[in-house]
Length: 91
Image 1 (cartoon, rainbow, N blue to C red):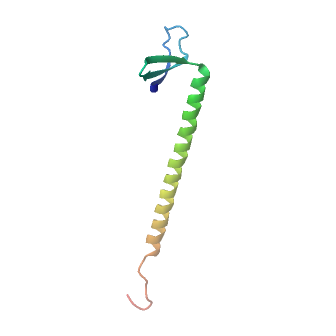
Image 2: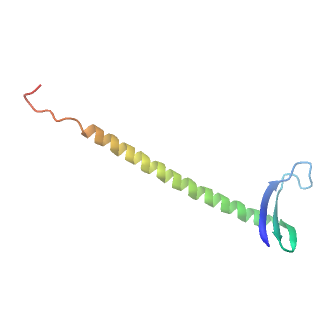
Image 3: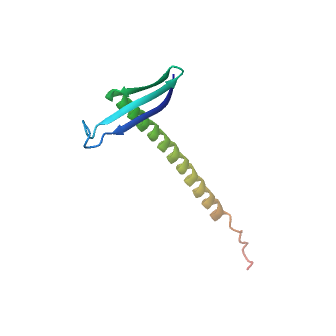
């Protein structure tokens, strides 16, 4: 069987246990389809994985921005230093 969908959603306020997160996994294979309701601990694990991945991606993006800004500052300094030499006694 292969995983078709993995869904985490918050129950509506009018549903039993309103406001709580629920998760289901749907599998399909030669023998048919099956839907499994997942435990609250699974939801916490998945959300923790998402949190860690998002933080890692944000750090990588920030590092890229930092490198780009350092390059821009370096280019700016090169432009400032790239002024024509003035020779004394000439105008």
